[in-house]
Length: 95
Image 1 (cartoon, rainbow, N blue to C red):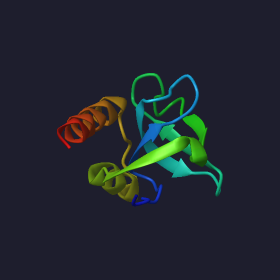
Image 2: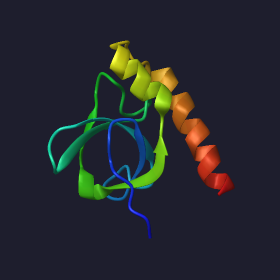
Image 3: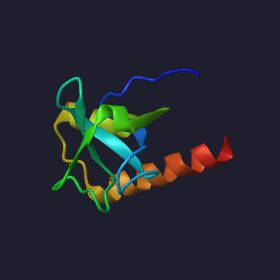
Image 4: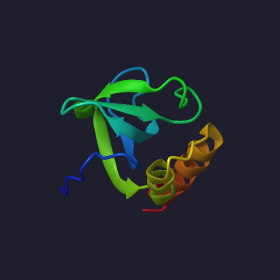
């Protein structure tokens, strides 16, 4: 089984907690144990979820548009996150 890194822009699936099974985008890494994630609905950019990295399973996909917006210092909007995650969910279902 290939292990993918968890980095900002990575699409991950929660493996524990009330949000188990949901897709998120990694917004930032706090340290080697924790990351901030968002899904644009329950966890918005205003209210990020602090999640243990061991409870996140990388899908192997990275949202390039998210990374580019962060690099340019542009705000990332919740509706964009929802759209990106919807696209990623469709890709994962096809596989």
